[in-house]
Length: 88
Image 1 (tube, rainbow, N blue to C red):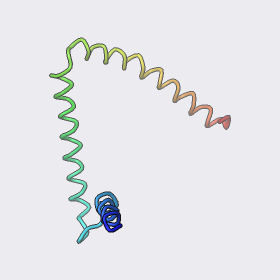
Image 2 (image 1 turned 180 degrees about the vertical axis):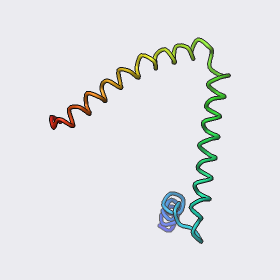
Image 3 (image 1 turned 60 degrees about the horizontal axis):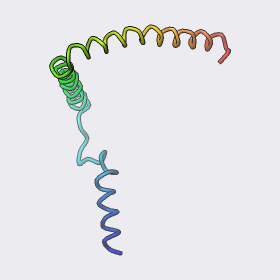
Image 4 (image 1 turned 30 degrees about the horizontal axis):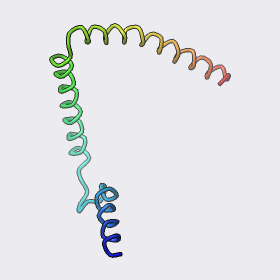
């Protein structure tokens, strides 16, 4: 019985207390950390995309996205027009 309670407390500590701190963090500090994390992620994705993927795969992806984006744009535009007209 005590091991079940201990395990439950451990899960609670690991997954439910991510926002409990000893003191408040500065908002600019959090924003700077997130900015750096996103920038590093984008740069890493660019490096992987440039050097890991074969050239032909990058061309195919570019071609497929070039065909997909206009169709998505037309779908979103028609949905917007219907919403503004009050049909949806």
